[in-house]
Amino acid sequence: MVKRQGNAAAVVETVDNPEDFPPAFAAAWGEDRYGLFCEFTYKRVVQRMRWISPGTFRMGSPTKGEQQRGSDEIEHSVTLTKGFWLADTACTQALWQAVMGNNPSFFKGPDRPVENVSWKDCQRFLEGINGLIPELALRLPTEAEWEYACRAGTTTPFSFGKNITSDEVNYDGNYPYAGGKKGIYRQETVGVKALACNEWGLYQMHGNVWEWCRDWYGEYPSESAIDPIGPEKGARRVLRGGGWYNDARHARSACRVRHGPGNRGGGIGFRFARGQ
Image (tube, rainbow, N blue to C red; front, top):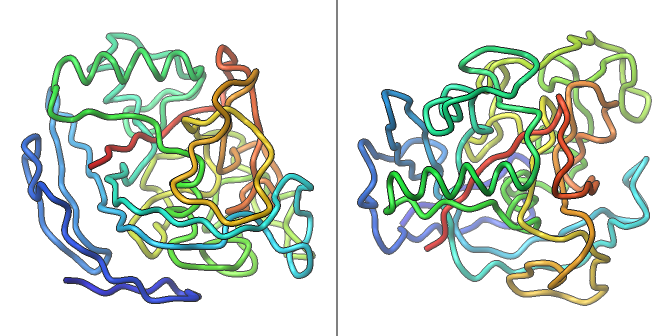
């Protein structure tokens, strides 16, 4: 049993080991200050996964106390009853290339996030890698799983606190959040581990590239929810996290946007998950 706490956590969570630790696909595994991890390797590309334990959190943003919030960020209680594995970084160009044999990204670099990929492209990648390594059973995280992992136990606008700087997050530093100081504007992506991780060992959940989620976009419930997966159908899929070209408010933990599942862009990537 491991206990961990976010840097502004409302609760302390007890982390139970997953049912199949270490999982069959793992080439390496262990435990560090962030919790349990395991790694898989394909064509010499190594990807670390972090164990995210079950828990309850406040999803969305408060109507009072969080500036520049979206009207669709209705705050409500969400309980995730099952733990899951989540990649500690966005999918890299190296891994995409190894699986798909191409690289659609505008900003090339093996350790940079793959971008310019649609939701449908991500599904083709996941089908491909799961066919190559069936034990992985990778998928996109749900929107609730994504925000839970991004917050890492915090209730502030960002997992780093009430504000961010461009030293911590890759965004357009000309447009800071809530009166913050201006910072640099890199005008491109950076390596997936170039900037600091959150308190659960997950890198760049804020900024760099938007990340596709499993869910169709829909309105939040006003009441509490258990293991939500979004609407059964829709026209657009959810993206989270903000991109290198966005202002700081888009990098907030609660910020949500949506695009058609066939849309691509130089600021759109993804991060994969694995359930129990």
